[in-house]
Image 1: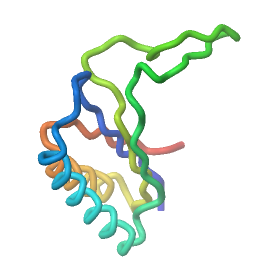
Image 2: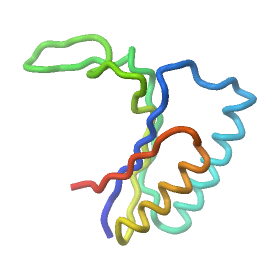
Image 3: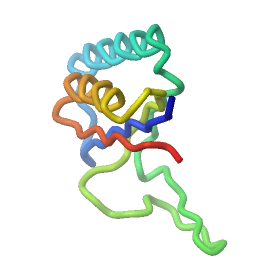
Length: 109
């Protein structure tokens, strides 16, 4: 079994209001439970907004995100899967819940 990172990219805008975000997060919680039952779920976390980041390069600290863009990494889930196809299937299910957000599936070294 390999590990795969399912990265959630979201726009640099305010999050949806609670009445919209609440049901989405409930469905995501159900998917996480399903991943746990299947033995695929390892770890998941959401991240604070990019303005809370600090970048360290060559010992110099800089406030703010590493890259300027219209999207940022908003959270991630680490899973185990027998192959890329299985990981992509979990990513596709996550994408269906989080539409229109992009989910990047990447194998862990």
